[in-house]
Length: 333
Image (cartoon, rainbow, N blue to C red; front, side, top):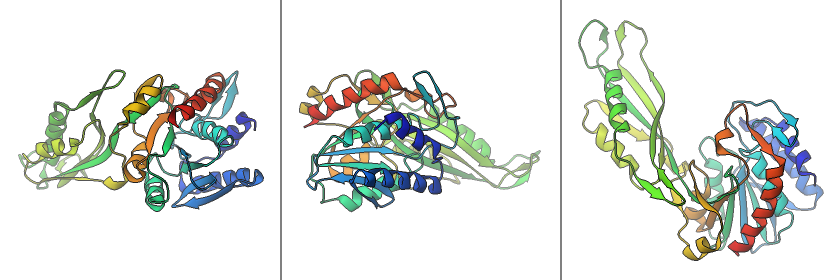
């Protein structure tokens, strides 16, 4: 298999929406069936498998963000949305999967949104996969073996007041949210140390409210992107908002968001080389929480390039990654 051609075919299929993901899965189905490798769809995830008593799970995601980088090749670099996040990882793991026996290749459909697919897959396979199975989750890690990742939640805070003329004093929900955001930014959040210090983060990303510039609105809301390296960061947020009247907060589909994950197997950690921690969120949490897998995160590319118009995969780095991931598999056995 020429990995460049495989990746280019995947990049040509726009997968920032459900129909595009389905088309990409059809391409994967044709690809594996031509190689006489069994595959199926399990809870909206694409699964290719060899054997029955699986020793390893390989996972990455096919969906991308909506921002689209034009596909082009410049020297050793392949540009395009998904080149590293995460169709390049799908290519890397597929390349490895073709060499392995007793393995599963699982491609997620919606990691960029809510991870409903991989949550459903893990629930469906619970009890069918032996505990302690080794799992590699493909994400851009600069070829470092990440033994954990930040948790992610979407937390929504709504504030309510009395609509009135903007020239009058009143219970202004926008002012409440402004105060709450500032207090959240001053919170003392958790930290962990792996190769360096990693911290939790609470970031307001969407704010809604108001109908006219001269009216105090009846309600307003802010959406928080919460990235955690601790177990009760939501409790810290709720402690802040409990000081305010006519304010409520709630998690958005919390069961589908990956929580903070850190591999605890000291023996395995000691065998692994060049370890780090993934500063964003990945789906390793679900494999660990539901299937009791020993999961690490590994892949090619710089996370800082993901979700940008400059996203690219360096084929020289990819070749190095092909060698490194085989070493990781051997260390994980």
